[in-house]
Image (tube, rainbow over all chains, first blue to last red; front, side, top):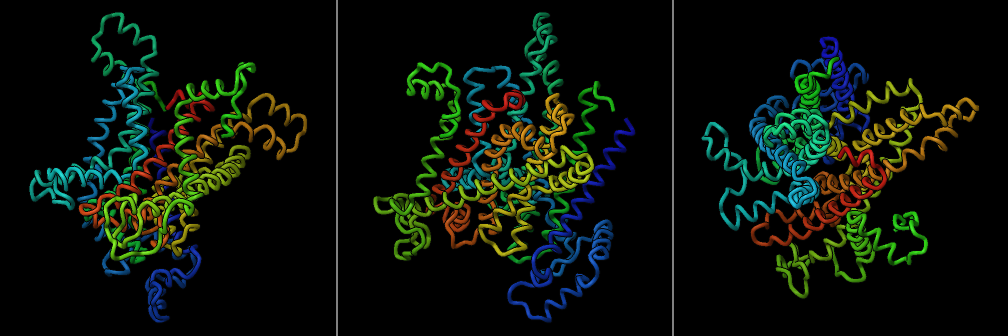
Length: 313
Length: 292
């Protein structure tokens, strides 16, 4: 068990190392001079030279890489070209809206998706099952921003039930905070719900076909207890796996959702950085988001043993 | 329509019409997805024959609601939304098909090498793990931000993050097939490696790859639209669905058609491709069908 955890940690470090190499090389192997790319189209030769010096681009690549990694490990993600502020500071200033959005979406989406999946598996072949599966294909196909604008149009502009856009920090009251997260969470969570509901249904169907479920039924175990205690628990591993994999969907979606709903989070930060070609910000955000994704999946792998004691490493 | 032609004749005496009906009844998702896609593809190809001008601005006719002249209304620069939506299908379909073809081709080659040669495998799979850890949209944003925005840059940027998924799939097939007796027999018989790969291993990868290609196509269309929407994709002067939505978002309350027309078109195409993919998966890959 301990050797498994150690091995898994080592491979996580390795993957993050490779991600770091990719993120570093993105800028340095791109065609053209990175300093010129960062400086933009109207830069003078002097400006480009200044950026070259600032970034230390005249050193050999491995030297630059080592210097960059050492800095990153100390929490230094570089300096924003545009605002001249540390990237780490810019990200930490904007982390609250993004975390709020991601965590509320995840909690609500997982609860809904697992319930839908269990329901569909229990009522397999009926109209309820069909309807849920059709909805899941649709949920998977409608892009975040289209759902987002439709929700705004119906619930904010026409019905005037909810505020149109923006974010209200949690310290300014729970009410406005929730109010402004409802629509973004629905838009962001739709594809995630569709993905998890599908896997839950399939995994449940496999478990429900097992002999011990028939035994439980024959013994007269109540439906609810049978579904939740006997079946869902044993169907857990694939469900938890896809919850972890789906986090990539959430991360990509956060960037778009924050743009649609004008939420000043890390996603907006990176989108604004694109137009200004503020490359250190893009690099920093990719590195952080990838790190989160890798860590979530590490956590998922480690929960397998809790879910299924038969899994021994 | 080659899918229909590939249907094995179950009862040769049946007339062709009955065969088609039977195929449609058994594979409703393939037929539904296929029909929607065929119609949209034909509309995109023959766009100039039945739509107006998608580019010219008519400032006097800005934000007109749908009417007989402008079927789906006009945008904030007086351009015809119907024409722009139809032309937008060109970019989406082109990007979707190009990304699917390229990532499958590259992924197949890497996956074959990785699955067959142990030494390559170790290095390649770690690289793929690293690449897969970067969320696709972010990687694409970074790649586009570095180079000048153009359709080919966008295709390249979306292809890169899709490759690892193909590599993993191909590698898994190769690893299982390599132990099969007929492959061992071929090795023992001295068949050259390239011939084993090409004749005995590649055919086994084709059915799951066809299914994978449709899913990649759907995801590429979504990512292209997202990139355009975020201003990191196709140049704004080309009408794409993402660009149209991005340019119209300030007019949501006054002219919702400017956003909903391209939005619904986008959702419809992705839905059709996903339906096709689900149907093909059920037909071609029963093992996967049970799992999903």
